[in-house]
Length: 463
Image (cartoon, rainbow, N blue to C red):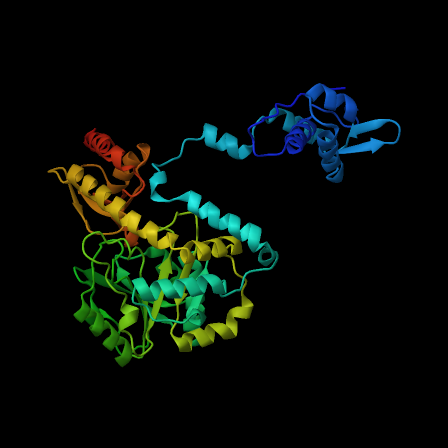
């Protein structure tokens, strides 16, 4: 009979009987208490541990309910056969969980900054969903997205982005790429099979339309955004643009040109897909209002995402459809299931309802503005020249180097700094280019000077 001597923490909020339950359960799962091994009696364990008989009985009762132990009349309590033999050997080797081991043994590949998000507030909202709205979690999410979240998004967009919409026009999905797939289906229903895209621009979206059989026309981007007179004429089309913060150049489309783009869509019977990625993260002056708010002819589809304003692993994106396109989606929504976590949707709805999201945006603007200025100060040299220095989470850096952009990015990765060649946004090979996109947002502010100094030294090595 194994001696049962748990370390009962008198200051823990977890009840004594549950601490005893935890100890015996872990001992059985790890193989320290073998299958069919007899356990101490209630009286003897109570005396050994200095706990009441009731406390020990409650622990044993819970273990019996869950099948970890069983009792024999006039004999006592015994460990159940809960694991196959081969599993016991695995658990014996496992002193901590795989998740804990990952945190202990694997250093994160890149810098990360816990100041960028208040997980305590997120946890409060998640706990409220679990404790007060848990019945909702037993059912699948609406293919269009949870109404509570669509309502909060519509309020936020009207107040902060000038987007005018009803929750019925909003579709939620697990990431921009899933949203774009929905959009491709709707455009096909509208007999639109031609898409104009920004060059340079967000390649994954371009690839989705190409793979769905759309004809693709790349249109060059200038200092004021996409070149409107290069857009298709007399061909009903859709154009994918990011007018408030062009990816990756950071170009902002001025108000006059926005009206020109809307006029093109009306005359050409076409659709504008407005990607408002990173639009809230503008550090000098007020954020630019969305193009959708200027649209009076229902020509603009508005696309948004939470991955940069919350944390990157939360793949929640959405689109706001014009009423006619929303009607088309309603006819096909039954063909799809929602792949975005219902738990995360409801948590985000509460997070926005309580004003935490808006507070986090303000915090990020201030923090990222300081980070951006620090990075620019470090990289504005004869050797490196940063551009796109007023918004977003990255900057373009041109480096005077014999190394290729890919080699420079590999150097950055070795220091935990994320970077990709600008060619990733053109789909073309740029072997001789030394221009890259450097992500600074997750580098802690205090670490930026040292990190940039190391990066410059590495870039100059063997140059």
